[in-house]
Image (tube, rainbow, N blue to C red; front, side):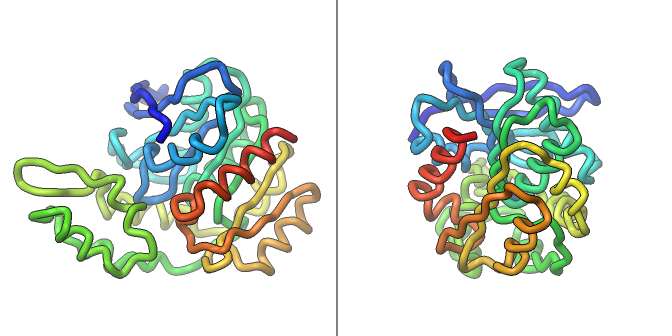
Length: 261
């Protein structure tokens, strides 16, 4: 897997955020993970983008090695991503965002267009009203005696690796870097109608949906393409976390899109 260096920076409102940077002179691509994830989980895409691209993966607020502020509304996530792009000083960047990162990607493109050159949205719609449905995750213990016990407790999820990327071992046992109440707040804030932001993003934009995921149904994806002319929609035959299970296929799609964009 591509190696990356962890760096830290502070947003204008004092939130300390971590990001991983693969370095090099390639075109910058900002990767934004989904809820319960972290930037490191997105590094697999870098293996398939090649040296023409430099991947910078953010640990969004409340995730990974970043701070845990009080606010998990949409404005905070968008402002954090904008702060990182400005901190990097690289000009407009392409953004690849999964789920929670996907809505952040197209909202940043709409609200701060000078910071974004192209957008890839991984399995997030322009309108989302599904129940949060994370009761089993919220009920997990704060610590686990072993990694095996943690994996056993995650047996109900489609892709445990999405969660175990955020597992850390301490003298008292294993725990996750995220806090369930904060993730609940972040997921509650993405429920709503976001067509205005989605349509307002004028950059080249591709939506990648999971064929076995319920997050972006086929008819909704078709509506996204109809309401926003120029939107490219492709399907990967995977569950919601196909960014892990179908890395090579996704990486090839993203590279081909960004080469054109």
